[in-house]
Length: 127
Image 1 (tube, rainbow, N blue to C red):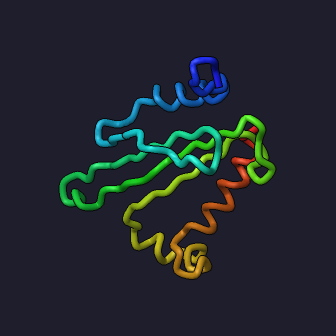
Image 2: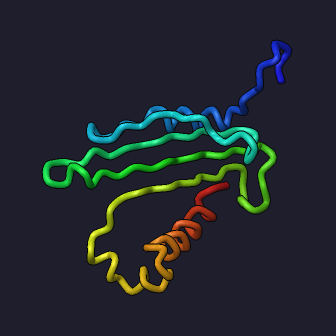
């Protein structure tokens, strides 16, 4: 903490926050900052987003959350100082439901196959 009692936010996390806050999104997407978890990491940012549906698909909107966690000391299970957590809700097209890789996930949609690919990339992308 600084002498005034304020928490010192590391520059590395401040850069990450600026890059997220400066992102331009499509007109049909709304992003809002929400309270972030406080017990998982010393520093965190949470965003919620909504995608507006159009025309006949007006009710087929998507929504989600994006959370960035930061620990300046790093966490072994994260394999770095940052961790990003996402949750998305969106309707699936019938072709995706019939996809064999989704069926192997025992009713959890395409979460498992997608997660493996993303985790593999994240390990190499996050210092």
